[in-house]
Image (cartoon, rainbow, N blue to C red):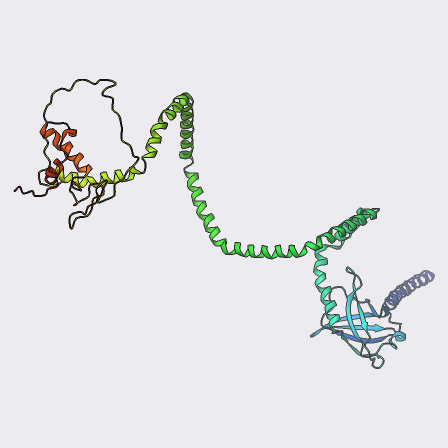
Length: 423
């Protein structure tokens, strides 16, 4: 019984020693990992920020040589404080005025502390010294580049970038000659393209002017497009009516086509027969405006003669039945136009043969029958004699051609409304 108790006590004691040994072994391993048994020179690095890739145990380098490691990272009111453990043998070569910069090992790797040794050097660095952050222009620019590059690297996703680079490498493998030929061709093209660069620059400047012009007229162009939208909307609303109109136009075109096809010979014959009449009308066309204007100007005078629009009595016509002159005899009574001399248009107040005659005082000239307004015109003119003969012939029972030429001197003033006194 006593023997069993002793064995049980021995086993418990052995278990306690085993646990203690294990705990001591783990503590020793941690201490060794933390290099607590390794002598070092502890200094403090003060920086405004640490970044995401600086960790405990990160390397500390000087001119590419590892001289220590990061032991602790603490935040402070002004940024961060980093405890650096420097190798005693290597710290002897580092001056006290050394500065530090946090830079990454690679584009995707963690950061490390890079110590910059200035010239001239100060005294040797010692335990408890404080290192400041490198504030030189190059250091600040380099840090800014890495800070700006970090979001890009996050967006690119390194694993995908690695896959892409691998694919590019596979695609270019064993194609060096082709790539070289391509580069040579591109170089030759650029060499021939370089002389055209001034012209290209000029075209680009002209393009800027054109763009500015389009920018200036853009409001008017937008207004035009807006107005055209209204027009197009109206066309869309009238689409049924336009469709019906197109249908009618199509039917009309077909009818016209049929008419022209059936009557092409008649139309050609009519054009040929009308040629002489049209040529005669073309020859006398210069007198058409004058004749029409004379007829228009004669209307007020004839209205006055006929008493139109007034209370005064107008011209009275006495009609009488004369003896039958017989029927129409072909070849004898054929009408003929024997006048010649071309188109004529007598100017206002000028007789065709006798020269210039003044109109009555205070009366404007008439273009066809010169004289007072509303009168028959120039006394004893051919126009007046022809008109007087036409009016007087039925009253005296003779043909207009048999009326004496001097009758216009006696009767003309009566038709003009002039008071005549016989002595």
